[in-house]
Image 1 (spheres, rainbow, N blue to C red):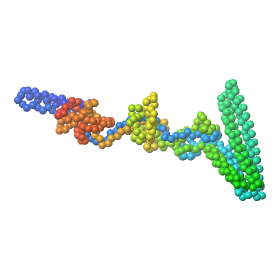
Image 2: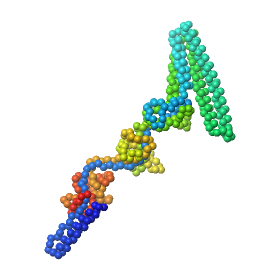
Image 3: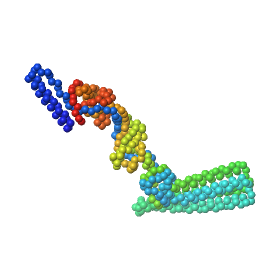
Length: 447
């Protein structure tokens, strides 16, 4: 506003001087006509620089990789190794479950392997008196282990029946309003535990029966001598026993729940004493969440008017709401192939190029995607371009105005790209009367 006051004052002085001279000219008709005074204008030079086109976006910080951690085998929690927010390495233990049954399975599987290998050795070496005694003892021991396993199955079946009857009674009492829901839940938990114990006991019994069959075959082979087919069967028995041992060891390892990859723990939902069930069952919630805090994205939406300008790999500049003065460099990593029919916008993921200090999933971020960038182009102030659909600029040359049509390109802030019509280093009018025909004398004033 002050600039216009200065310019108008100068124009008024110039016009007053012109009127005085014109009056004097009338008094002396024979005098030479006076040249109109120069119009004061503000000018600026045409420069070269860089101009960009951007699309403004905002969205939420998310992890590029996140996992819900669920147990592969159910069990009771005996130890929790981490807390919320802890950083963990890949494979680091998070939660330990009671593994007594699984350790027993491993021991039985190891015994089965030892028996199968011993049988094979006996067949390969031939049956001597000492070998017959060893085979007979192994057979007797296997039978005893099978009897113990059968007793455990019978006890587990009885415990399951008791738990099932108790659950039914509690459910009936709940319907009658005689007990609380918590008592029914406790009865159901005891029923689930009884089923799990029965399953473990049945597995141990199957392993014991396999060991009995293997020991009996060894005993028979020692007494009758081994044939080629019997040696092949013995070798297959060793391979099968070793595979069962590997499976038992895997089940034992499953009782320690580990981090699937390096990252940070977002939430632990269990405590020592809780009973968790297998993640294969529907509706089971995770015992913890792990996310990669070194690979963060910002998920934004781009309207259908601008989504066609966005390309993979384009640069983005973002700022967290918690640190608005810090610029975070990112790039376009994912562009959704579908548009939401309600919002008419497409989801875009921006990958942070370097870990941003303090960035956490769920934080709000805003910024811009650079969809076009041109370097070394001619630039003029935005106020230098007038004319609307047919833009022009007023170039000052030799103290006079030259009106030139121009072709404009990108605009950024107060600068506009000029594709044709001006040259680098020329001076253009940025503030002055709108009607300045070509040839008008002008006088440049400071900006």
